[in-house]
Length: 367
Image (cartoon, rainbow, N blue to C red):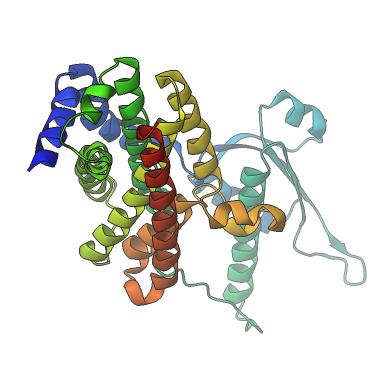
């Protein structure tokens, strides 16, 4: 009963700030929509230059396929050799494809043209993906030509993509963005809660009330948890309804993972609030932690890319486990039998953080 009044007080403090209400309930929707379009590993409209020094018909067929692809924007096609390095330096194109005749000297006939692909390697990820698409187009054209001539192909591989057959990067990023925004909201709302009481000198009033230490601790965490749940529901609706990302798993299992994650992240935020002396310090610790959580979570790059010596940081990062679980549930429709180890690790982190945070809080109020 006494705890209810503290939770009500915390919620009133949030509701009274209209600007904060906008940031809590409207800004996340806008952020998810904007980030959903901006944070994408898909490639589109890559500027391409083509130098066709070949007389083979196959070269024209490859060029036509590249022109028709939405992935590339063919800026120029020429039959004259150019200073290719200068074109890449100017940035007018990011890739140059050069076709040259390949003469079979023994039979004096034109074979398939030699193809050279020059890529601007500054953006290594885009270059690698583009080169793969170029090679795929060239290979498909040649195999189609061989098949049209009635020649049997000795071997042909067929690739089938499960769970995300259209290879939409938003399907991978969207659920992760929801987890990221949940982290931002809960860390910043909670990390300044106790510090604000210190700065406003109202913490003593709270301490001499009939509430015990545990009730004050819970009373500071629960309002942020309630707001986080509401925001997460809104975020999930946005990614499903706006971006059309399929939700194939069990919503109750996702709720369970989210609750365990929020227990961990709220305990960490309260620990920041206990240790910080000012709201500025709390915000700084929050931002610093947020960057580490995000970059070590597998949100942008696979966990396997992290050097082995630094993987222990990722292993104690709660956001890593939420990212994996939410993607497993969303895209694969996996149940708890597939991610119980991740949930167990997340629970272990949550219990550890709650214990450390609560002990520090009790030590703080006993001074």
